Amino acid sequence: MSEQQSCFDFEGGSASQEEYNKWLAGRQLAVRELAMRLGLPLGHEVEVWLIGGMAGAVGGMFVAKVVGWVLDATGKNYLVPFLMAGFAYLIALGVIHMLLPKLESMRIQEDKI
Image 1: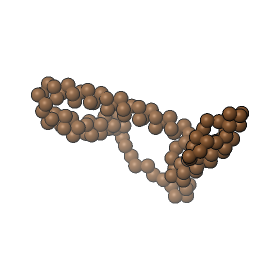
Image 2: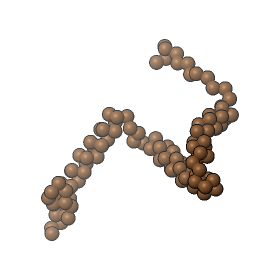
Image 3: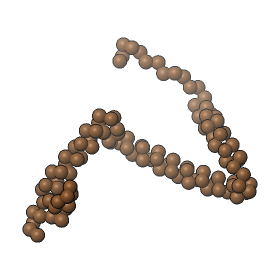
Image 4: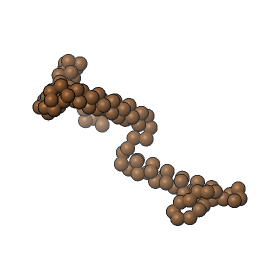
């Protein structure tokens, strides 16, 4: 194998490093264009999405463990987990109202748009 040849194999044939780099650059450009058209975040917002996703995953693991304990304690009675799920929204709403007791609608002035 010469220096320009490589073991990359895509789209049914082998290619040199240069050809592979051109192909990869085209794909990256296509992904960025698609993300821009769809309004997907490509910068610092991604970090926020990742942290939120991680928090949701950890919360899901915690809830699954709690539900397992409840089912073991109640003899496989699913009423308690369903009640927990039903009241979770109300509890979250109460927490939000305790943290932000005075919620107001945002007013946008037309002349500043």
